[in-house]
Amino acid sequence: MSDVIKTDVLIIGAGPCGLFAAFELGLLDMKAHFVDILDKVGGQCAELYPEKPIYDIPGIPQVSGQGLTDALMEQIKPFHPTFHLGEMVETVEKIGDPAFRCTTDTGKVFECKVLVIAAGGGSFQPKRPPVPGIEAYEGTSVHYAVRKMENFRDKNVLIVGGGDSALDWTLNLHPLARRITLLHRRDDFRAAPHSVEQMRALVAGGKMDLRLGQVTALSGADGQLTGATVKGNDNNVSEIACDTMLPFFGLTMKLGPVANWGIALENNLVPVETSAFETNVSGIFAIGDINTYPGKIKLILCGFHEGALMSQKAHRYVYPEKRLVFQYTTSSSSLQKKLGVN
Image (cartoon, rainbow, N blue to C red):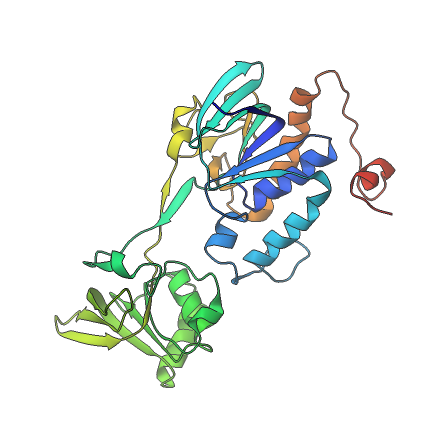
């Protein structure tokens, strides 16, 4: 067993909600460590749509997923959180009231007074299309996320799907790609109507292609696509020339080990009360998309709110003898000192 890492708070999940929670905890003098199964911070924002714009962060008319992650990382710098990436918390053992011993899949052991689950919908992976041999192309010419748009410049891109992700990337990559072909099994889309209208306008103008049907086979050597075989809705088989394919069939969310931690679950989500977003286990909180309560809305800004209230209750566990006096960062010289404000 490795040396035990002791911290006030262990945050599982380094997405936007978890990152902002570290800020709120830091203002109240609580030290946080993070564990995240991904190899980078930012959660789904950084992993799935780092360059896709987000429009509903208060006071920021538009920011990319990576831009929001970068800003949050800058904001929590004064509190020096520690990140343990590419790891997953496997076991949680109650050792006090409250106090927890958490062990990761690499054998790393943490002891904390407060545990915050900010793991989105749990660990996630894209749904793989039922195409024989697709594994050979994954990571080279078949991609399940767009991490850098520039990589698709001058490519013949086949986008498969009919939801928001498929339509969004059809429109966003169109200016860069040599040619975009959108393939969907039917001429009916689940995406935002405005996006569908824009896509149809491009098709009508001859600026991209729309095909109806399903991919049945891929061709190309050494992981590099040269084309896809498509069976149309009329059962006719044809070929689409492409060197890159983006299948958007949604994500499979896996709750993972959380189900074994003694926490109450409801439809693979964690029920919480709404004064501090605490679970049925004292000292374990759940914020962001992984929690559920009456009126829950899955927005990043709601997760920020949840993190702020969680921190107030967490302070009682970390500093049981200390009275918490609420302060505003705009007027508190002590909070401004913590933030390094001159």
